[in-house]
Amino acid sequence: MKRNPIRVLIVDDSAMVRQTLQAVLEDAPDIQVIGTASDPFAAAGVMRSKRPDVITLDIEMPRMDGITFLKKLMSQHPIPVVVCSSLAEDGSKTTLQALEAGAVEIIPKPKIGTRQFLEESKVRITDAVRAAAQAKLQKLSRPMKVQPKLTADAMLPGVTKAMDVTTDKVIVMGASTGGTEAVRAVLQALPMDVPGIVIVQHMPENFTRSFAERLDSICAVNVKEAANGDTVLRGHALIAPGNFHTLLKRSGARYHVEVREGPLVSRHRPSVDVLFRSAARYAGRNALGVIMTGMGDDGAKGLKELHDLGAVTIGQDEESCVVYGMPKEAYERGAVSIQKSLDQIPAEIVRQVAKVAV
Image (cartoon, rainbow, N blue to C red; front, top):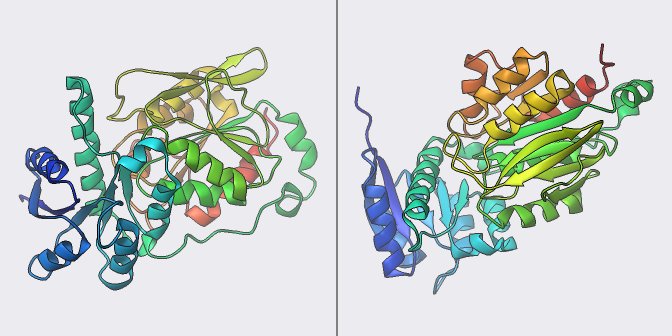
């Protein structure tokens, strides 16, 4: 049965941006632009007669800024929102506020560039709209449930010795739509002595630095945006920089990351599959893979490789996902050995990394 197209309302004060977004979105057969608006007041007028499935929203606009409009929308008439802003290009903390206010995705505005850039922008924009259309707004309209900070002693009495033995374990984690809050919930609940973590969260370039800085300020573990050659250390988490693939490598007993350019993989850069497959090659069963909320299948193939090598693999369950896409694909391919809700994942990670390797 043919599905109805995704109805989109574009809100941006730039006529050129509205025209560009409309052309990009209407080129997709499953998306229909039902209207455009130059500011939130004009958007409200359109919405009186037409209810969109998704709104693309600028942040910097006259009369009312996008964050204020987003908060009003989420409290009164929740509709999935994709923030499309030039602020995403410089990693502005305002874009983080947009996610906290309920935005599903943050993407940079399309601009004139090379053919490759334009094609990749089209992929990002249409994928973001499709993901938003599937998002569970009840998961966005309230803060994620977060467990109190875990300690190894509190979770697993006498586990310290076991964790000392398994110093070569490493955690690799991937997420997309809804993942910023999911990653925060997990990292904020992990103890400071957890094995090193490498994370791919689909985000625009530069935005990942602000995201890492925010997490670093609220988590027991140290969090930073990954740089080429960074060592993966106990009690530290590295966030793959936007627009760059991040791979796990090993030199002797030392894990480190390689950050590099490359084509889109599984429609993304950074790609969760690239991280997971590198972990399969260089860490094998000593890795612990975690796949969380997001649309599409990025990470499913790589997680299956980890699983087949004997690594513990954890998938977020459907109920706690904003979009049950990536974890579902991984689960259906037999790549997930343990399925847990978001608030149970940190404790499961602690339990698994505490086990002595045999």
